[in-house]
Image 1 (cartoon, rainbow, N blue to C red):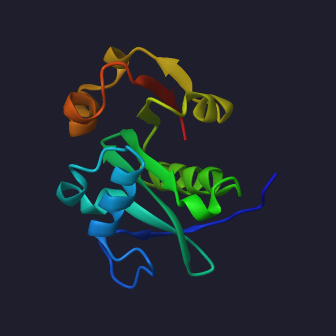
Image 2: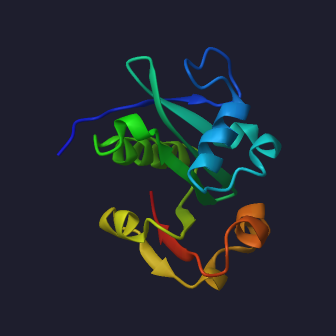
Image 3: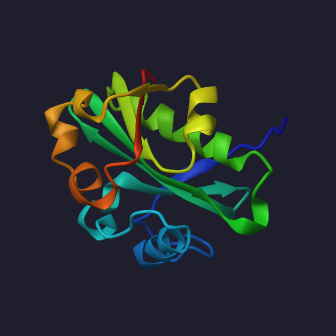
Length: 153
């Protein structure tokens, strides 16, 4: 088990180490087959994860009233398998909780087992609140075959 920890910084900020803002966030997401088309429309929803000044990954959380949408968590190839996915997810869940989110949803085509191990439950996509159904992630960016999951952060 890893003791990896991260600090989140807004992706729209400056001084992001080797992740130089939203363009690099988009590139990292796209390189990992994750939705990146709406990053610039929601710059405050995306974060860069740092460990001791080293940019190790990115992720996002959209807040829609008391519902949240966990977005596009990815760890850089060079540090995969070192516990950073868990650390980034922990930090994003704290962000959601601190923002008043009571139900956190996500869509995934590849990581259902990872999120199930974290306590996320598979739910019917139609169970997600209307505020999430109208997001680009639900409406356009993720295929209808994606697994919808929910937890309470």
